Amino acid sequence: MGMKQQTFSDIEYSNRRRKTKREEFLDSMDEMIPWDYWVSIIKPYYPSGKRGRPPKSIETMLRMYLMQNWFNLSDEGIEDAIYDSYAMRSFMHLDFLTEQVPDATTLLHFRHLIEENKIGKRIFDDVKSRLEKAGLIMHGGSIVDATIIAAPSSTKNKEGKRDPEMHQTKKGNQWYHGMKVHSGVDA
Image (cartoon, rainbow, N blue to C red; front, side):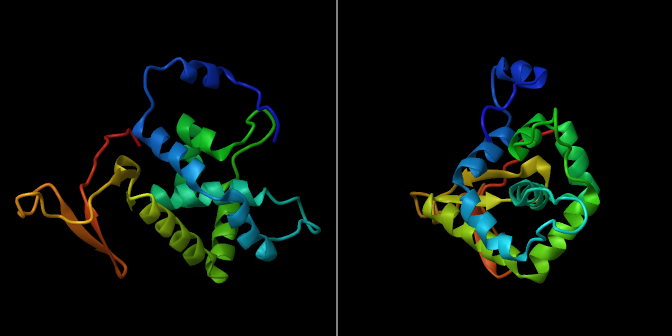
């Protein structure tokens, strides 16, 4: 991709005292995700762009799709959130001087392609196994509490009693346990 031109936002944000929880979360996901591998899973199903306008890059669409899932937003909601949030714009790896965020309809088509070809399950299973290997769990949901927290494998403390702050939750057929973290990010 080469050197990305720094915008005023980038310069302004680089002078802050600390990163937000959302930014830390997105940075860790950005590093952890095998982008080339996931793009290669989607590529055989993705339109070539021989007809109509050239499609957005698979990676751009995948980044938007993942954030939509992590932060539990609608197609329009994630489009707006990316424009509103510096952390989300950074995660998109777009050069805003030359590109726009994909619109809600483009995301809808991408989501259907992912769902119809059962790619979402492959990707999320891969995320889960990578997080487990790293000793992390993902407590998703809304933007307010989308954060990764490390948690021990048992809910009992050293006295053998359950920690009242620790909870178990079931999502699909999978049990997760840990603490709910509300980082109070303005949505």
